[in-house]
Image (cartoon, rainbow, N blue to C red):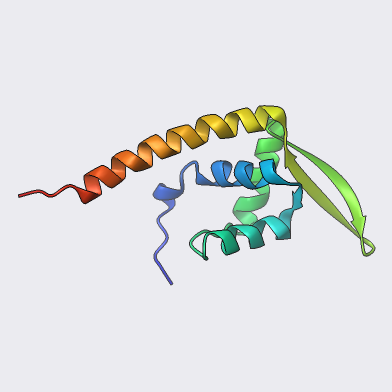
Length: 111
């Protein structure tokens, strides 16, 4: 299993959660499964990170939630708000700019 560096994860949960939830409404387990699947298991958020992040994004008005009964169980579904979608656009642009810069440095040849 690859080593995980928490310092590299700064800001990543917000970015990936907004991306997934801008596409469609999802509940916690669905979100965790999609993160693992789409990242080819490079990213996973445990419950101790996932749910506090979802609640924080909702408190900031970036997500909305609703309860739904499914097979006799209550599930909380989350979806990005218009404010969340605007935040996603800014975060995505910043991430791409930064990751391109890091890639240039990592790929640079030093004599």
